[in-house]
Structure formats: C-alpha cells, structure tokens
Amino acid sequence: MKYTKLESEIEKLNRAHKVKLRVRELNNKYAFMVDYWDGDNKKRIRKALHVYVAFDSRTSASDLNNLRIAAKIRDNMELDMSLIRSGGDLKPVDFIEYYQSVVEKKPDPNYGIAMRNFISFIGSNKISCSAVSRSLCKKFMDYLCDLDRGFSTITAHHYFASFKAVLNEAVRDGLILENPAKHFRIAFTTNKREFLSIDEVRALSNAYCRHHNTKQAFLFSCYTGLRFSDINRIMPDSIVGDHLYIQQKKTKTSVRIKLHPVALNIITEQLKADQPRPFIVPIGSMRTTYMREWLANAGIERKITFHCARHTFATLLITAGSDIYTVSKLLGHKSVSTTQIYAKLIDEKKDAAVDRLPSI
Image (tube, rainbow, N blue to C red; front, side):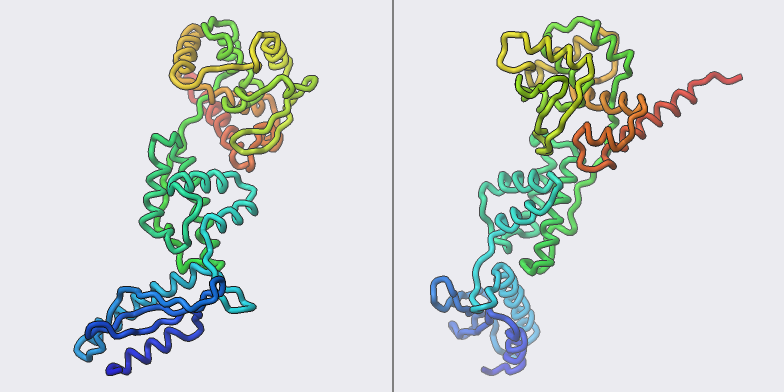
C-alpha cells in the first residue's frame, strides 16, 4: 500500500474488534469492506461498504474521513450483534426481541403500550438494532403525536419517554452506540380536569337522558371510578356480593371495588335488563350527543365528558376525607403522584371559594 498512515489507522481501528475492516483494490480505487466469521452458517462473511479511498497523499484528509465513515458503519454492524463469548461467533440481535425483554422487567404499562405502537408504526415485529435510526425515531414521535392516534399530548409524551428509556438500556447493553432519540421530546400541556360536585351528580340522577344505559353507566362510574373501556366490559360474574372485580384494560391491573349502595342499586337494575352485559353504551359521536343533551337537561353548561365521571369519583373520595394512597389503589394507579393531581384540584376549588368572598 502506498499510504502507510492510513494503513496504520486501519490497524488501530481493528484492534479488539471481531468485525475487521479490510481494503480491496477496485478500478484504481480502494474499497472498504468488512470481514467476520459467521458461526451459525460456518463461513466467513465479506461485505463491501461502498466507501472508497484513493491511497494518495494528495487526498489524505479525505481518505482519513472516509475511513472514519467506514469504521462507524462497521461499529454499528458489530453492535447489532451479540458476541457469544465462548466461541467468538457473531449473531444478529433483533430490536423487538430486546424491547420485549425490557418490557417484561418493567411494571409500568407504558412500556408495553409503546412497544405495541412501535410495532404498528414499522408494520413488522422484526427490525435490527442498527435500523432504529434518528430519522425513524423522529417519524415514530410524529406518529404518536398524530391526532388520528387519539392520544393526548401527555399520553404520547409518556409512551415516547418509555421508548427512549429502552434505547438508553440498549446503549448500556452495548447494542447501539448512542440513543438515536436522545434529542427528541414530546412537549405536553396538562389539560384541566373537569369534575362534578355531589349536587351536580344528584341533578344528573334526576334529569332525563334518552339513552338509559349511558346515564346509568356514567353514574356508576361516578361511584366506582371505572373508565369507559372497563364499564363496557363488565360481565354479570364481575359482581360478587357487594364487590366488583375487574382487570383494567389500560393498565392490566386487577382491582376490587366495594360498591357504594348507589352503585349497587344501579348494577342490580342493569343486571335485570335483557342484554348480554350490564352496560351497553355507544361509542363516539352518539354517546357525546346523549351526554350533551342530558347535561343540558340537568342545567350543567360545562363541557363534561364520560371520563369526567372518573375524576368525579376521585375528588368525591378526597373531599370525603379518603387518603391519597387509598384513592390511588381504588383508581388502579401505578403511582400515587398521578392521584395527587386530584388533591390539587380540590385545593384549587377551596382557594377559588375564598376568592369569591365579598369585600367589606
């Protein structure tokens, strides 16, 4: 070789690497390639990297830069394989398999939900670690933020944060050189959580709603804190005595809820109806229409969604003197910090009540 400095640099970059950089002469140019032993197929693999050098002193700076590019490609290939220490063979690592192994160790459900969304995003349950690039991470972030996904900004933020955490673990485990998503973050704003006072709940109970199941399900949620996705899944055998047993769809956690007499009366009446489940409530615009009409009949002008029943349950419990930890368990929260939001809402109401006192 004519350019010995470059040759020396190649030797340095090959030290302690199982995947070696080689140079092959091609049409008066020299092409970089990688060379390693494939233990699964019992053969030596040589692959061209399509990066070239001239081995000419006049292009030394350019040649060294191309060497760095080739070395980066080689490093990514090597880090995309796990080294079987006993035999020194190299075996590819699938990122989804690795992702799943991390999810299984994490109690936070956001990890599993984010993984399922990532698989849906790439349209496959297989992808190499090196293919999880900066641009792919940016596109996945945009995918989560797409309004068609139906995620709030804070939900998308939590999903993407858990995805980044998995990539950080992949860095620590030596599967990738750096986290390709480290410079991306989904900003979020915490939406105001609306809830009803006990007087408003009574007004709704006495008001007419043209879809009886919607009315009953909402009032039942006010006294149990169940999400709409869980209300619609209650089966007759979910009720044992005066307790409700159900696995929450969102968090996959099982909860046992003592039914307040109001809730018990509602579910008892619903179980007498000629339908396969106690509550059969429409989704989408029809439910919104029924709710809007019903709220107007009760004289409530604020925008109240079905999920506000869950907020109402939490705030009624805290107002009645229940401690945060107990409320957290009843709601099925993974963290007490999530439940503390409701305590802050109560404090804000108290402050607002003081502000409304007349001056003298």
